[in-house]
Image (cartoon, rainbow, N blue to C red):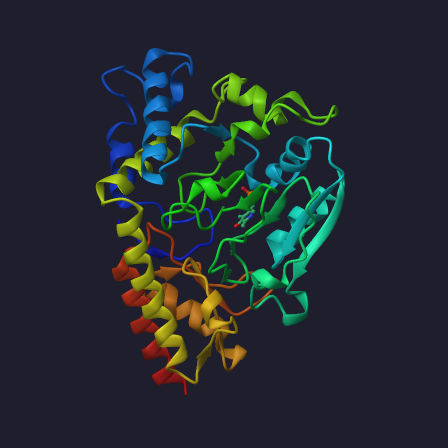
Length: 360
Ligand SMILES: *Cc1c(COP(=O)(O)O)cnc(C)c1O
């Protein structure tokens, strides 16, 4: 069976080496005579998988000791509520930077729990850019500042980390985590749904400065309390065992490739090839300000939208799928996460040139 180049934004393509290893181990994990999915999450075997996943993630992201790593469920969307419930710590307002679809969802949810101050919004620019540091109207009394370093749908990525002084910075890194090195110390909390750049859906990674935990709102459900989750080693209830196992293998895959510096270099090269192909043509275009273009999600439109379905059909015939843009923006989108091989990007660039030649 042939594998396709899958440009899906999420759930997204996974490293072939890791899929093969999971296949190898499917019926009998480590001589246990059962799959990882059939094992007690409290067993010695499973605990070793869990501990290795955490330590490898700490290693590749250089996560300081005083940060807790939580492996939760409920997706990034549950974090939209968990963050205000846990991080307001008695304060009544939080600052949010609005750069597109995912920021807006986070803001709408936070409004259920606090007053939201929009520190900046790029709505009027059609969400094709990010605000400058000087353009952020930050409230020194805010519980935290929330932003979305990479807007998965708009294809907009912050080229800088906002400076927020003493107010903790919170980042929804769902589509950018593990794509490059990150200075964890700059953040109070980082969260990400796994299904883009980590592993299968069902797992949510939270990295949180332990000083911020322990002051949840009274209404906070037990499962939504970071401190409870941290104190129980993310096993207050049954964790998503298979997703966490698989994520652990992906962390090792990254480590074996040389870590996040190496991954970053490859990602930059892949994105540069694709943006160059788009910019060099009058047939394709990308509306995002050049310094804020996403390295992970590359949206582009065809000059003639009537050709969209032909483009998608012919791409599929050539073994390239899931290139349709999000329904809210139309056009195309190529998500080129870590697991998308450079050959996949080369194949797409070649297909785009051929399609342009045949249709203009
Ligand atoms: C996909 C995505 C989400 C939603 O993630 P779920 O895990 O489906 O809740 C939130 N934020 C960003 C930036 C995303 O890319």
